[in-house]
Image (cartoon, rainbow, N blue to C red; front, side, top):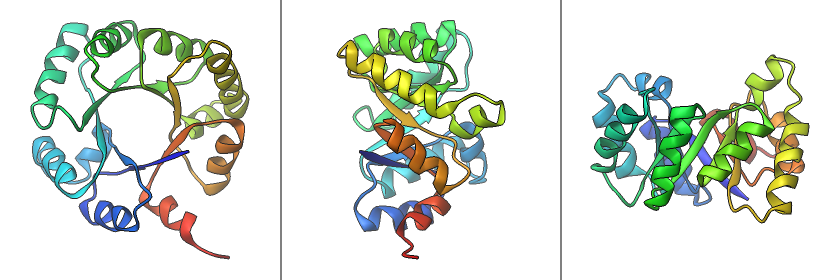
Length: 197
């Protein structure tokens, strides 16, 4: 079981990593915008104050542009920067090439079992199903997690399920029970995990 923090807020990162159970940080373009700093400065600060991997999502859509953006991101720290790429044809192609180069990747914005399968075939280290968004669109997120986990285990696939996009603790607990290998959560939900009721 792995726990990632989905934030770019430095105070939140310092507080969470001080406890010692967070494996890394995930970000996306919206989260980085909230810092009101340049993307570059935000990434540098996250690397400075966090431990473990820092996964940054690409904003480019075309394969060539994605790969160019990845090279720029890896210049920050080619050991600790991982790449989040949405599951599109160009995204899958990029994930495959990065996997072949042993660069850590998350195939993100996963909504279906078939997307999870092609992401694994491309060699993604993680897939990120968006739980709350799935449920808002009347997709049975828990059943999808169970299906993916079953397929991965039957085929000895090493890709891990890193569930994302949570509204509450109940969703987090349900996906863990359904077989997610990891979750990435907001600082607010992280704090709720620590509250004794």
